[in-house]
Length: 148
Image 1: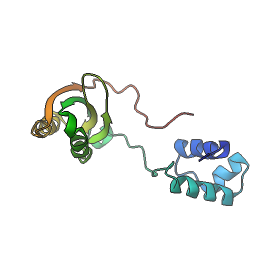
Image 2 (image 1 turned 60 degrees about the vertical axis):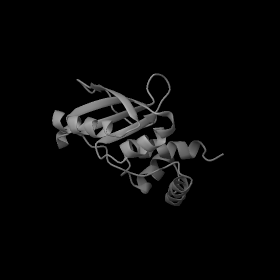
Image 3 (image 1 turned 180 degrees about the vertical axis):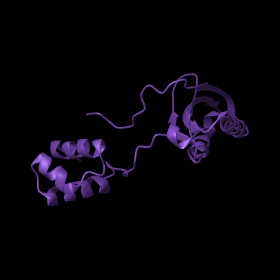
Image 4 (image 1 turned 90 degrees about the vertical axis):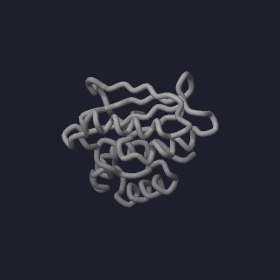
């Protein structure tokens, strides 16, 4: 097994606040600081923890437009298109999907002009057959943390 219940407790603490000190985590969970340090190091080594980052309010940074872009792509080119989309600074998530659309991309944009430029650049990719874009009117929930 790659992880146990103690690892999960540590992960829960880190998801709540990744800046919590190892000492505070150790005290809260009744562990030694060395144990917390070693377990976090191992969780990073096995890839369960990918990185630590701040959760930023995109709207306060001027990225008030959230767009969901569905795409139909030529079958043999899906991975290539996904890689190109992933390289865009505006794109937060790229999903390889089943159903009518092959790819779903979610992005944050400063304004309609930025979104328009992104869509036009995306449509220049030869393998992209069709896009359908929706704009989020309100962001009700946006949280990438896993609850377990």
